[in-house]
Amino acid sequence: MKVNRSLLLAVAAAALTVVGLVLPATPPAAAASLTEVTSFGNNPGGMRMHVYVPDSRPTNPGIVVAMHGCGGSGPGFYASSEFAGLADRYGFIVIYPSAQQQAGFGKCFDTWSDAAKRRGGGSDPVSIVSMVNYVQQRYGGDPNRVYATGSSSGGMMTNHMLALYPDVFKAGAAFMGVPFQCFANAADYPPGSSKCTGGGGANRTPQQWGDAVRQAYPGYTGPRPRIQLWHGTADNLVPYALLQEEIEQWTNVFGLSQTPTSTDTPQANWTRRRYADSSGAIPVEAYSIQGAGHSLPAGGMAAQAIAFFGLDRASGPTTTTTTTTEPGTEPCRVTSTVNAWNAGLTESITITNTGTTALNGWSLDFTLPGGQTITSGWNATYSPSSGQVTARNAAHNATLAPNASVEIGFQATHTGDTAEPAAFALNGMACATA
Image 1 (cartoon, rainbow, N blue to C red):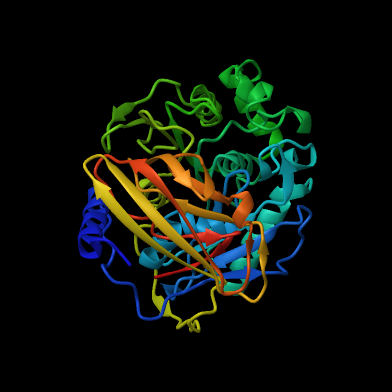
Image 2 (cartoon, helix red, strand yellow):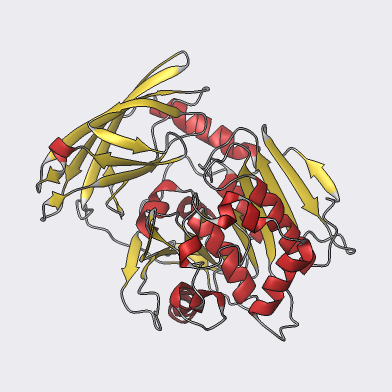
């Protein structure tokens, strides 16, 4: 059951219009689906790969690598972010890697090992480049339009990939990241206990930060990928101060001043600083999100990243492929009901295991609309309280048999948007919604 569905669609359309993007009110009759690729080439990181290929796309579509945060997964980021919907609109392909390296917050992208810091050295960066090569060969992906983005650990890896493979990636958008070479080694990871995110180890000069990037690919003299940086001013996990360190790194790489050439407010609570070169091009721009914690990207930010990449513009002839998905093949189904009042709401969620195997322990990933913050919950634990949320089973409902359901829910405050999440993923796999 949906609450005020027509009103919610109108609100969503209005919100997207603010950033210059209008999506159709109804989905296409035949929708693409997330697909796992089990053999994509050299994979020293032992990573999993999922790809989203829109039904309508140019002959040579652009490619976006979209990377999750620690403890997440590719399918989870697919379900909890807006990149797939934008891919439907603009016809680019999205790669969703799943990290397999264990760190203090679960599985994270390797930005700490010596192998990962060397071009061609191994680990996750080599695996990600293999995924890009696979999409170029399998789907005709345009090698001149390859981009990276990610949240938290994925934002850190975005900086990483732009430093190591400037000849592969044309631009990146890093949400809540850290500069390349911030983590000294595995012992200096994860965030919260490291010198990098603890403050002292990250206070370097612009020249030192820039040298780290230049040393990642010695002798490279080609163009550098542009970068868009995002951080919440109230982020206590990956401190907001690290945004300035990222700015110093990349402005130094481009030979720019650390003083922005312009500052504006694209939306309420968004402060954007731009760093233009002598030609007027903008290789570096940074967004400070007032009051936001460790919860990015929020609504509309993915669209801003896609616009920065230039993927919001048509490119070449379009081909259409019909993808047929049999009803009921998703491994799970989720229904949600919202009851809202003034500045509060409750949301009841029913999760059904539509697969053939019992789940012994489960987690449900979803993204709350902007302005919603969970204050309490039942039958699950919820973390964080806003943005991209993971609900994990309680002790009494950890086992979910085939065709069995579990009901969970939470109470939250809101600032006007009372919509339920648009998508859910159970144990990293996208769920059908009803």
